[in-house]
Length: 241
Image (cartoon, rainbow, N blue to C red; front, side, top):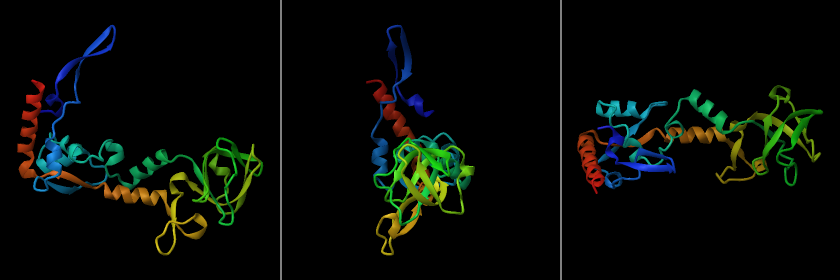
């Protein structure tokens, strides 16, 4: 039985003149919560990059019909595009959208305290290079929405200036925003300001998280049919209440 067929239909009033028959997805049973706590019912599956839920179901159970059991057992899977493991190419596309713009990394003898105003234009050598979207004093960079990244020097230090505030800072390099530092750590693994440690980039952290997403909880093959039938029986019972 298709998953949403298990839910009750009811009339929903959208407005005075509009009433529609819709699926009441708020009706739910505790069956899967109990299974999630009972290790005898589930095991773990290593999903491949870009693998879809229906493909995982096919691989495990020989049918795509049980794809819906996977996000129910894994509360972190809400948006399949965001929450399932991606290939390197897909991750790059995802990160460029999640963290748009360019990071201007400041020299380690500089600081950003009380400098620049969010939303002001940032200039280099009299040319507008972007709008300041954020600043990270402890991470050692400012983030801009680039007007033209080709005019930003890549292999030499330069002075970035706020067009409105006239504040300045020496920039040591630039990178896509998702390649900017997320944290800096000292030799003992303690988080420290940018001038006292080794950076770990946003990209590195996101790729670590992406790898962790490959391990997902699934119902054991020998239990899947009984569990689904139990779920359907319970949902049918509640539909009649």
